[in-house]
Image 1: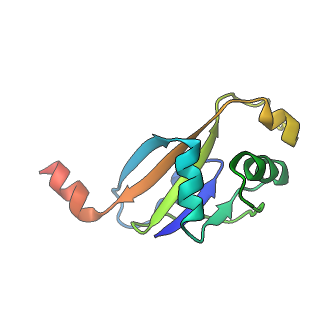
Image 2 (image 1 turned 180 degrees about the vertical axis):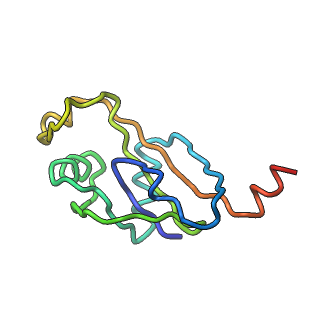
Length: 121
């Protein structure tokens, strides 16, 4: 399974087909994040250097800054680091400012077509 860590989730990450998808979103612990990253060759989709540095220190894992487009599929696990505070418009935070904001981690999975067909029946 491909593992991607990001600091946001967007509907643009969903595949264009099928046009109806079912997601599973579960809060996970910092230790679960660490284990998922250590047990895979993960890809970073953390777009800002300060955020990547903050996460690297927080998780004790090298997480490079990497501005890439992510498209989910049934073989991709997306780990999202969610800041629990809305940022001022246009504000780019320093590593120290990020460290002051509480965070949660979520695992986002795209469920396969068989699952959501069965749920509709």
